[in-house]
Length: 72
Image (cartoon, rainbow, N blue to C red; front, side):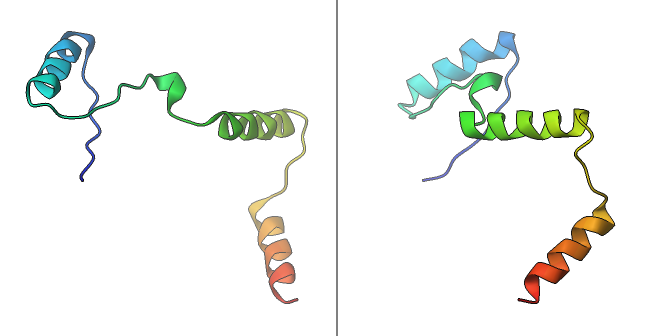
């Protein structure tokens, strides 16, 4: 089975749904809010809070830590 992702405008939405229904195509309708699971949204929010609080490292620091942890 193939999956298609479409982004119809409000005006096109009814026509797209009618098309799927007429051809007996299974589909699910999602809003922008439902595209990411709750745990992903929570992780993003924690990261944003870390950034706002100054808990960050540079890319170079990250690479050094990654390289050291891979040597074990």
